Every structure is written in C-alpha cells, then in structure tokens.
Amino acid sequence: MQKNIKNVSETEQEVEIILSAEEFGADYNQELEEAKRTIQIKGFRKGHAPASLIKKLAGPSIEANIAEKLASKHFGEIVEAENIKPASRAQLIDFTFTPDLLTIRLSYDIHPEFELKDYSAYPFTRKSYSITDEDVQREINLILKGHGTMITVDKPAAATDTVIGDVIHINAAGEPDEEQKTDNHHFNLEYLPEDNPFRKELTGKKAGDVIEVTADQKDADIEPTRFRVTISEIKRLELPELTDELVKEITGGRFESVTDFTSDVRIQLTQHFEAKSEEELLESISAKLIEENPVPAPKSMVESFSNMLVENAKRQMGGNFPKSFDDAQFRLAMKPNAEKHAQWLLISQKIAELDKLTVTDDDIKAYAEKEAGKNASMNAEDLLSTYLSAEFRDYITDTILKEKIYEIIKSKITITEEVTPIPVHHA
Image 1 (cartoon, helix red, strand yellow):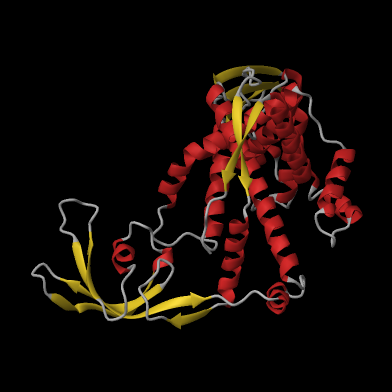
Image 2: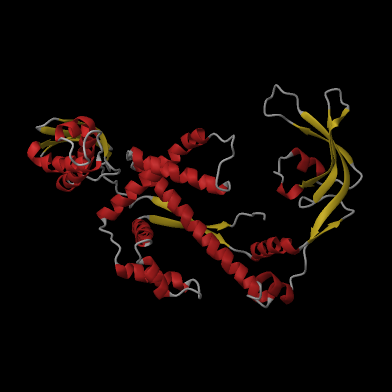
C-alpha cells in the first residue's frame, strides 16, 4: 500500500491510498461472488451468470463497495501509524479503479497543532455572593406569592401592583379611536420594564384617574403612539402570614417550622450562588484562554456545537421552532458561539494532555459517592453501577475529566474574591 498525505489547512487533511491488485483482489473476488449469488439476470439461473456479465452490470457498485470497505480498513491503520488526530470521520472524495490499481482519496478534519501559552500569571476575580436576611426574606416572599390573594385597594398604584383599566388609541387628530379600544386591560407593573411608558405613567395613580401615555417609536421618523387609560381598579397581592402550618403545606411536610424552612431557603440560595460564581469564573477563564490562544477550530467540531445550540434552543421553545422562525439565520448567528465552544474544547484537551490527566475507576467511584452524598435517596453502589455501564461511562468520564481540568487551571492562576450582593430577581 502507498499513501500520500496532504495538509489542506490547519484543520483538514486529505490522504490518497493506492492499492495493488494483490492487495484488493481477494476483496474484489469476494464481492463479485456475492453479486453472482444474489443478482438475478434474465436467461440465467441465479448464481450461474458469467462473471463478465456481472462485472458489466454490477461492476461500478462492486467497485464502490470495495473502495468504501478498504478505505475504512486502511484509514485506521494510517491514523495509528502516522499519529494523526482526526476530528471527524473520513469522507470518500473519489476513487479510481483499474484491474491493477485502486486509488482512494479521503478527506477528514484534524485537531490543529498549537502551543498553549503559559496562563499561570493571569489574574481572575471570583464573585463571592453575600446572602443577607433581606435576600432570604425576598426569596420567601416570592414563594409566598403562589399562596397570596389579590385584593382591591383604594390607594395609589405601587410598582408591584396590577392596574386595570380601559385603553383606547388616540389618533393623529387627538380623538379617541373606538375601533382600537381594549376594556379591562391588566397592567402588571412589576413585570414591565422600568422605562416602559405605561409603568411610568400608571405608577402612583388611583382608580378613577384618566391618563394619557405616549409610546415613542424606534424609528424617529414615525410619530409616537398615544393612548388614553381610564383606571377602574388597583389590585394588590396580599401575602399570607408565614406560619408553621403554611410551611408544612408549602413543603409537603418536608419542613414543620418557619425556622427550619427559613434556614433551608438560605442554604438553597447559598448553593445556587456558589454554583453561579463558579460558572462565571469558568466563563471568564475560558474567554481569556481563547483570547490568548485563538486556535483554529475544525469545521466538523463547529458544526457539532452548532447543532447542540440549535437543539437546546428548540427544547426551550417546546421542542420546535415556530413556523416563521428563520432556522438558517439563527444557526448563522450561533456560529461564533459554536466556534468558541470548539476552541475551548481543544484548549481543555491540550491542558489534559500536558498535565497527563486521566479518569480511573477509582475516580468514578469517588464521584458516585460524592453525588450520593448530596441526596439521601441515592445509593452510591447503584450510582457506581450506572456510571460504569456502557451507556453512561463516556459521559461520566468526560464530566470528571472536565472537573480535573478546571481544578488544574484554578491551581495555577491567581483568583481574587470579590464580595458581591446577589442580584434582585422576580418570580
């Protein structure tokens, strides 16, 4: 066998495989005999048609099968002998077949060769989110909202109230347009952006007030849209008193006292924001290492991450994009993000290679014990059995390896803690 390897780019190669008749003859004869047994030709009993006729009718198909079969066989040998790091499956470009020679051309992506810059001097900041009593109470109030009661108040609307009123469009002549009227529209002020004109104008108003709202258009050449709102009612959510009985109801009996429930809310907040802090640190680390090591990403790897991002977006939309959604445009918009994912994967693999990181059965056992410790209903032995199964082993191995890579990076860089208040969010 002869082989000729050509670098097409930093991430793509082609290989030409040349085989003599002695090297492909046995496979060709086997395919020919199989064709003779299975092909029915009029005028001949099955299996008795002459080889010359079989070659004439099925020759191209036989040659294609041989090319595919031998390409797969010899490509693996070449990869091992030449220490090639494929990033994709080899694709058959073309082949030429003569009685004496079979020439096969394959194309495939490769992992690019690059030197990872020393990152030990890079400084990073990790947010240390502080959880205050006010934060815990705010979270409890969000939980209590699901058990609250909407009541009518004879007071000016607060920023968390719901304002109900009739809305009518005011035309260019300053007259109300009865064809563009909505009765009993509910404005939930809490969920409107702070700069929303309706939120601005309705906050502080009472039932019986009539106000006009002007909504500017994005296009400065288009006249602002005007509305008149006649307020009929102000609704306010009244939260129930947090008692031991309500705690039992809310938690399904998991907690029996306000004290225990409050402590658990604090624990949950702390764990959530500790995880958020780590995620943000990892994002800043990956962004910096990608910036310092702009490694070219193989097309197939970028395509794989693009598919992942598209599928994630579909799941968030209930499984499918709306009919009017421009899938191709969205995929194009996701490409830079997919490229960064691919680059970070290559950099992570380089770190694992340089630090000789591996995942052993003991590592998987320790991971199973750690995960079981997070939930009393989990059994470490059952988890270990699952993790070692053919279905899950690769996934768990990859997860543990990522953790090891992250720990190696954190051990080499400088991390400064920055105390940060947690962001206020709404239910």
